[in-house]
Length: 284
Image 1 (cartoon, one colour):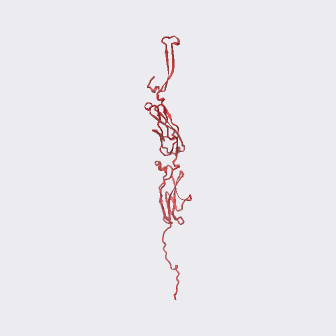
Image 2 (image 1 turned 30 degrees about the vertical axis):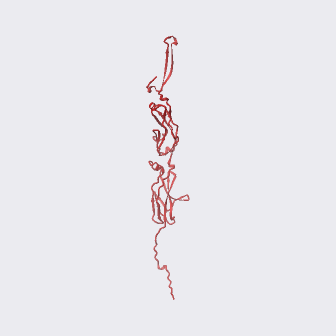
Image 3 (image 1 turned 90 degrees about the vertical axis):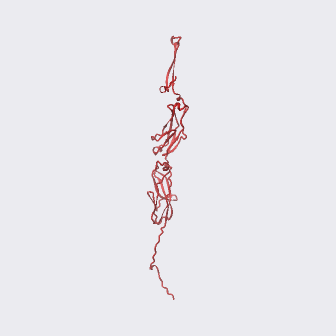
């Protein structure tokens, strides 16, 4: 039996009967016999050998805010796509937030940008279901995706601060710096300050002890040096402490010099007659 009506007959089972009748004897049960059997009609594409897609890395780890690309090999089949149809792929999983991940060619692509839910619920399991035309499907092994928060390991980018110099009781000197960036700010520049605000403090460090110098102040990223008598004269190494408020373990110290000199001035001295003792000596 041959038919091209696939819509009607593909994977349809029919019961058929073959009946045999004798042309010589028409008497009794021996005159004819019949045999029934089932026949299933189907396209040979249902018998193709197909192989599921594979990933080079089955346990990928990706950073939040990064553009993710996870490549996989194409589905294969023993019958050509010209006969059985093109391959298609369906992503199963990674749907905790709609529209973040999708399939592009033979890659899973996405860019999650929310700590909740992506980091808080990591890792995630997903798979790819592939199909040839409207026929056989195959499913990949489960892939375990871990999404990490890069702010937990971010590093503050150094920023030079000019030396500040003044004398004891002299006019105050100051220097202003811009907001420090961290490695996440620079790596994912389309998501500025994703690691949150930064807190600044001016400190000195001696024998691993961090303290606040009395001769320095910091207001709105402006450093001011106003020494008085008793403050350390000379070149003092001072630091701007940069701390991520939401990630307090990420702390950076930017050094600069606070140079304190003694005031250099002149004092006019006018002698008075009372400051001298005169003695009259007679020379004989």
